[in-house]
Length: 202
Image (cartoon, rainbow, N blue to C red; front, side, top):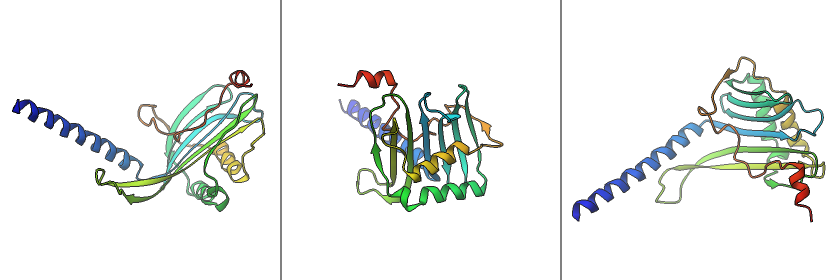
């Protein structure tokens, strides 16, 4: 009986240690993260060559981008962002107008839709929970759904979307999804097909 209890206790300690190592690995991976951004449009939106893009960029300009074009091609590339582009992005994401926004802004899609997501880690802080004695990071998040032009992107968001559309990952090298599965920000809003939205109308 005593050996059984000892074995269960050992297994419990090992599982706890594995969870801590995994979480510390996640923090180490994200320690230099500057931002995760995403943009997506429905096929009916005109004038958008890029239908879907996700970008994760570090403070020193290392980036990973997933981009789907209007013709159906999808690219996964990573590389180093030029300093002038990193400075421009930093200015856009740090503007008072942009940072005054937060939370989820949704709507009902009947025909056209565009969505934008941002996830920007804040400064490190120590956890108040004694059961988790490590530093944590506050994260600022924004999700904005522009459905049928009823809730258009604010000017500060539109500028970031334009930047994402125009960013060219020159010299980027391909990567596999399994290598970096978390390029996109965690998303609270997703585009619904117009037919689904119609079915949800009263």
